[in-house]
Image (cartoon, rainbow, N blue to C red; front, top):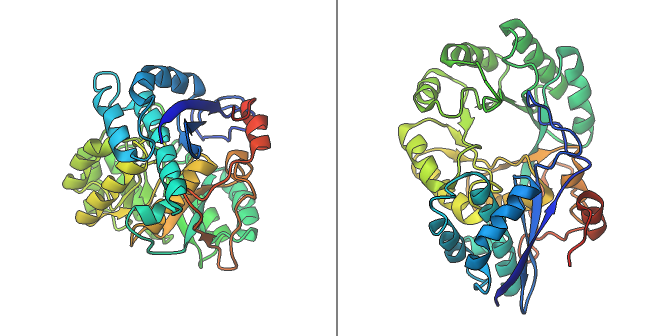
Length: 375
């Protein structure tokens, strides 16, 4: 079964807010779906956290390397693409694009063998997983308006991030967290994401330590991206000082980038993003490396329905991965997946047991948000 083509579908028209200082607009494209087409078999779907123009440029560079390749060998093919783009890749749009290709190849392998991807990764530890609603921080008097609607949908875990937090003063920070905890209720999980990868982030180690002490008072489950994403030594110091678990890693790509952070003890929770890091092949290696270092693996998932589907399969394959991120209110999550997603009475998501990612793309939604259907 050979790769005969790879097509890109940039998603526009409903791009959600990112909380960034240079805020995203609905027509901005930061998520691109890709389809890997085979000469005699199924089509696989992947997702890339990169704009369509950069994905298309990357595919043009990669095309001589993937055309005619065996579509049933995701790890070997993806490693071939990494190895042969050493000087132009190793991060950024090329590595992100390889991520989407790798996800799609695992989808094809699952469909060809009649197995869900999680089982191909070694076996399923669980049949369902708890999703946490990923929400932007607002002014304190608006936090309830963010949390109450998704709590009514059945969510019992919430992550609030970016917005005003860490950008004004400690009084505002605590007021936001207090309002969120009140709205979420004492029976729900609450996580806080400072958004330290935002442009010109100014939060430093002393700020992060003081803030972690405040978060402990509100039973926050983890403190995410508290520092600038290159501040390895400060992350190590913060983790040692904080009673709240420290999470991060969403900006890193490939297993080689994660190794020094895990070895140094920078994280309690590591959060690779399957649409950036190199796909499922790289993410599962990072996850096992994390486990060897006593670090929990919980995927970062601010992307698309295809990324969520990949995260669900990964969550099934690791014993301690009992949470996945769910970007609420995004049509790229809720409408791209045919049939949508439904929480059960316990606020859990079923992990698809159908072959591959277990996801069917709604072609009308694809047309609506990308301007084209699969050729």
